[in-house]
Length: 508
Image 1 (cartoon, rainbow, N blue to C red):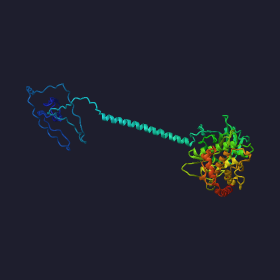
Image 2: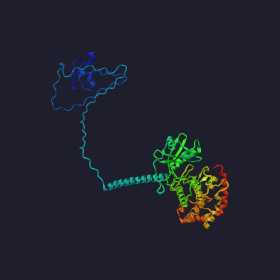
Image 3: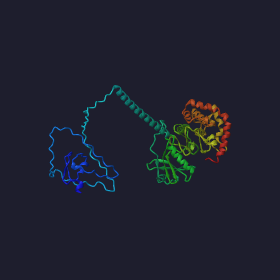
């Protein structure tokens, strides 16, 4: 083993100046190219699959040295130095069955001088240069952006106010002296509260009864009197009327419209709580046992009711058609201020629609002929019903005497009355000729214009309001239009009798 690895004594390397013990191949393994005779040994063994390494190239001639050459080495063996510990045999780097790992050998030092890269010293960064034109452009862009923001904010505020104005308009909040301020949200009552308020819905508190149900007077917990309308149980029509009335009356607030205080929906119970109007209805005062109302009071009632209906038609969005204008639905307070009530049959009519096709509903004698015959509902149907009610105020008679006779058959007399100013023919005998002739003319002309057979020839409610307020030009226009009633009288009488006969068995 010692003969293969070399002499046992350490052998100096002429190139590196180190001593290698036992294995002189280590000198060549690290890339040494010395030619010491004792270091000449067979090349390292490699696996047969790898080519044998080439012998190292001959060393380059060393430059002449100015120092004296070192003394020749002594042939005598040198004693072992303690400068470096004896090296242990190299570890086994690979197994016989696996390929040897790749060994990276140190590179031979180059004789060329190393080039040192030199970089210039860092200099301070120059300050950016801004031209006056660039500064002006930036300022203009900033100002333009600010103006754009202001314009967008202004547009947003304007759009919001416009939407709010439309919303308020739909709720009836317009700048009209007759419109009350919007109250707080309608209260939802419990059924037990309303039962206690009406003393168990006793007969002593019963105010009225109709096809819809009953109306009782009640005292609310806050001490305020109210009219509590209870719909009949299990009535589909009553359910529709309840929903329509709550939906519509919560949107409108006018001094000539009855106000809704709240409602109750408990199980099958449906109740509406209105403000209490203490002086009963117009029907009661005209056809009941109460005292006769004088002419100025009748004018006040007619004007107040006209303002309330005009508000529904022309100041609400969408417009509201009451569809049941009659003396029984005009409530009166102690000052005989009229309040239109009972919105159970009311309908919304959008502006883009010329009419609403619906089932014919209303009260016999007040229904407009075109609505009764075709079911096409417009606001002119309310105008017709209001004209009938004006004739009630003038004559003191009901619109229907029986199924075959109605005071509307005497409509041709209106032309003669207005021409001759002979009002005794149509005036209520209870008045005993105690009326103002100019006011009688304005009410007669308004009534005659409102009950025209063709709906398009009837005036708007706002025009009727002006006539009742004493607008002479409006009264003259109505009077001139009444002269055309002679040609309509025969057709009107024939059609009204047919409509009354058709509706007498189906409408109450």
